[in-house]
Image (cartoon, rainbow, N blue to C red; front, side, top):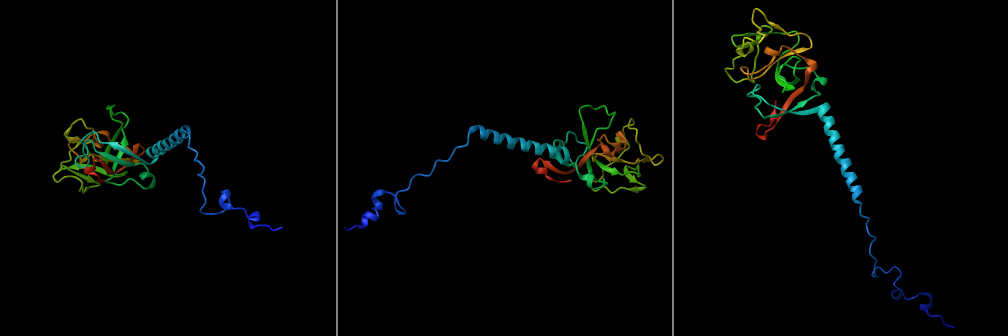
Amino acid sequence: MAISSSDIFPDQSASGTGSDPGGPVGPPPARKQPSSTRSIVEWVVVIAGAIAVALVIKTFAMQAFYIPSESMKPTLEINDRVLVNKLSYHLHDINRGDIVVFEKPDGDVNDNIKDLIKRVIALPGETVVFDQNKVYIDGKQLDEPYLPAGTITQQGPGLASYPYKCTVDDPCKIPADTVWVMGDNRTNSKDSRYLGPIPQDKIVGRAFVTVWPFSRFGGL
């Protein structure tokens, strides 16, 4: 009995099965859509992580500060925002000329301000004298290129109530672990002439850049 080839090899085009690349292809399996609950949880985790990172940076590394007064004019204007590096003085010593943010000393009666910003003028062991409207450190006139020409530095901005006069006959000696700070606006700054030397452990960090307004962006 003769056997036809179709008995051994069925017609694949008729059955719809086989490996013919031109044959019909079924739809891909549907993708499982993520649940709304899982999406919410993921966003909560992302936001919480971002907040945690921001808090760590603010606490240990860097913080923005707002300038509320004109005591550092013309270097800093009212409403400027500066970034303060809190790690600077864990890596190196405080340097003369640094602009630092520090906690308000104990006994200061101004309860509206927690932190102050001034420039470091003298370091531990040095002496400060005001003479002929200039600043002298250990008997040498201090070069202050950051001040406008003709700036006058008086003992306690001309106020007799300021206790630290730093005269030639009675220099101000800077104790260990403290620094002498002053505002660049020498006629309107409540600084070490009033507060005295600032303990180094009160210093929050070094201001290194003005970030706002953008027109005043730049290093300090």
